[in-house]
Image (cartoon, rainbow, N blue to C red; front, side, top):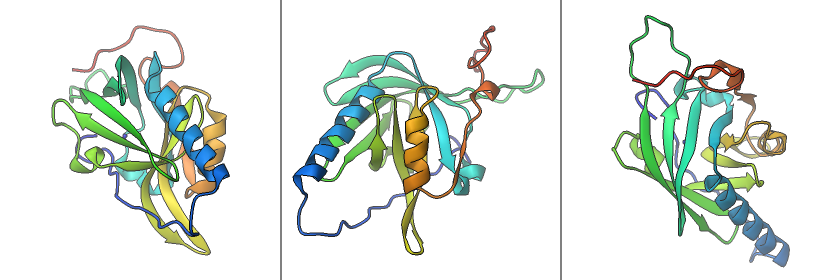
Length: 198
């Protein structure tokens, strides 16, 4: 989950088959909601960890979010592009604060972000489905597309480093994607002086 040609979160909801949620589905929904809430309230940094290949041209590979404070319905966090810049690169990188709202649904959970500065594209502030989540990461649906023999989603994964469980979930439920190499991002990987975005 941010500037021109940054990341386009499409809106899509998939109709669920069946006549009602089973107790297993309800339990699964509760777990996804609780895990997503834990992730967005985590201390320390969250990162964009994985994205569907269809989003390659419209996603900033290095995204970082730090906790400001917990709220009743989620949290307030920073959100910034933390790409490593060349010495002669004076372009401004996004840095803003957002409020994150997590809501439980009958099948899963949803996430909605509100930007304090109005820097996010409109589709970032729409409500998006969480396909799955662990205590360390969550898989967020960006776009639903028809992929034979079933529907697939274009997705992104946000979380802490080394979230292999969510990579497996994304590979199962989403279109083919790519892991973000966090060593290519500022302030991640090898220790060193962090550059402050202009």
